[in-house]
Image (tube, rainbow, N blue to C red; front, side, top):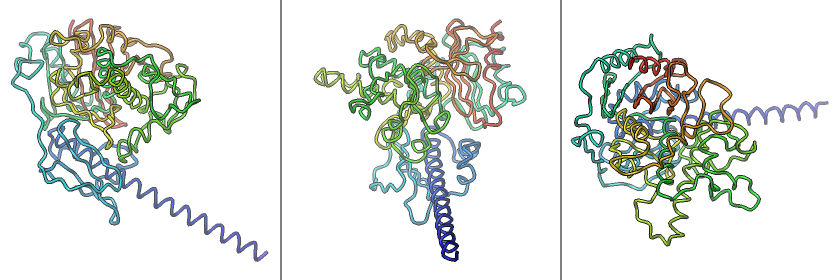
Length: 465
């Protein structure tokens, strides 16, 4: 009996000790995530966004994931403005988390434990061309004051009063007939302040895929060609970019919505994380909104670009590469940054930083049905493709889903052809072709206080009448 009691005590002590060790490890990992998040957002906010450090701490670093919300304010940042790098230490016995800026893709969060080589060269800033005529620049962007623009301005003003639509609004932009009808910003922001798009990046990703289709570099209905899925017998090899863009891949992920914390905050690569999930459902039988699907769609687009160039003997010019920066430059979106992981894979499920005006420019591309300055940048059927539902739809909420865009075709008082990019913390790009109208709303909403984009869009549409 005594031996049994001793054994039980030993086993109990072992499991108690293991639980304590696991708790410590989880706490350390959460601190590492919090440090990575803080480094990334300070880096991007300063040099993509053009924001002050005080505004970043007040806006970007509040109302964030519960997992790290209480840790982030306790960590101290080190900002190297010359080399545009940010370091945040999370443990005395580990290197600090680091984010490094470059002029093409913005800030890159480095992996936990990264010790980078010394960089003695000052960072080279990006060029802007604000003096060009709208929409390639900012000159002559605003329409003359009219009864209609005054009506828009009244509704836009309501967006900054949480009593009307909720949320914490930072910017509102309304474009019609190719001109800015009204434009408003919170204190500390202006026309050149960039914010993270969050999941509006998914709609930007869909637009970039469309450009690749127009270049005849990508077939969205062919197998996605993800390298990690090519072992004979892997059922995922049959998945297409279309499956991924429509969130009907059937892949499982760890959380609803698929937060992707290791990629967003932990310095993990897209290929390490997004490619690892197995099929749970037959493709095209279930809608599941997931970051991984968009990360994989972009990864597949890049793979098809490479394969196409190889087949043609690498004779394709550089303009046929998958290059978000070059595409943004064509549209005058000079303050838009599509960020990557540390292995140069684009994180186009969320990590794009851009201004309200740049989002407006992308909306205008869709109003023009893919034409820009006399050049076709998207296939002539791409607007219809991204705004048309196909297969299973979301079982919750009132909005349908096309291909990387949400559909507002069931909302009373809103035209049936309305489609939109929706993003966390209140990022919205609403496109209404029948009214030649684009609505952009940016914010710093919290989970408890969300902006009502449906009601706001309805009031903007009503203002036209």
